[in-house]
Length: 440
Ligand code: S3P
Image (cartoon, rainbow, N blue to C red; front, side):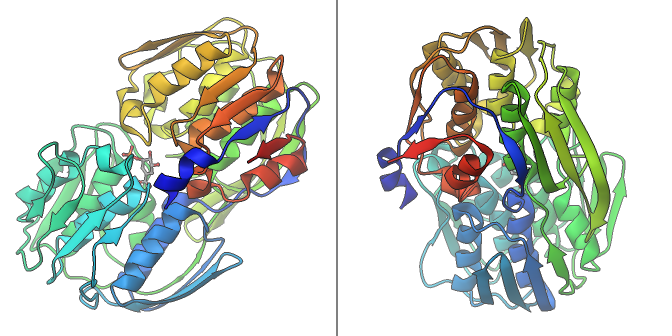
């Protein structure tokens, strides 16, 4: 659906203005996906509040309903999942369509590799072009049978009835999706499954497994579990998504006179790279009211406009801010001096090639932005005006919307329907804060 509709939504954003007020952005996408997956595999009920009602997490929810799980909601972010236990899923009657959602596809492939039934996973044009060998290779080593296209892409055909054996896997890329996929297969494997990551990546899977009473051993960059234990349903309070808050952190930083409080934002240390990078660039972001909800740290973020300056982004922060680079490039374009990003080749295989698409769009707006194989070099300066293409990538669309706060004229953004994959209500929430977007 989104694939066919996506060309039809266009944003026109008026230049200038400022962002003010208190906002709560929608729930964390990564945690929302995992609440459905692990809640379905648990014994007993899992009650979720703050669930992200975006297309990606709704695709996961629909897939588990199609495998026989009773799920009530979402209604105002409340979801109730009646877990069927590790072995209670049923064969879906048709292929499971996962839209634009890489997290759904990569994590579900791991857990479907351990089922008794066959399943086929499909997605939209973007998802069907994204690399899946990175999960198929370790899962095959565990004993899974997974068919892909010749290019190693979806549709994925997962054969049921495989006998899985735990492996000790050193991941070549820092990817939470790969780590989670292997760990979810490990729930069904004989013996011990261990994953070692080259750099820390988001650990929501490990935290939620632990919260549901499943034994997980973590030691530095290595995580291990054994198959055959039981998950127990719990209550999950999903914090606001720091990746969605990031648009407003940048918008308020670059627009003079802005002052915003973003409430109840997830502050898991594997996700907070965007705050560290912006702070190094001179942003004013206060972290207030720190607390912990259901095993995940949260806080209110108080951001005020501040003059930004360019930096060399420390490579170790890249995996901790991996989804925030489109809007960080906008921050860099509005900063004084040069910003250099390296070590971020993963950005080329996200929902779009985020290095090329952002470099092209920034160039259209008159910014000196040079794409490199693994990053970007941006000279801060004046943001012009014009019409850019988001290539159906939600985060590119929202990043360019924020750029309008400093633009010399209106910014038109094509192909914006997929904003609904992660941030339903973006246009309305932005308007409440002071950024006016015409969406047609
Ligand atoms: C995610 C992991 C990241 C991120 C994606 C969500 C997750 O992908 O980009 O938006 O929920 O595990 P990689 O693990 O492939 O970097």
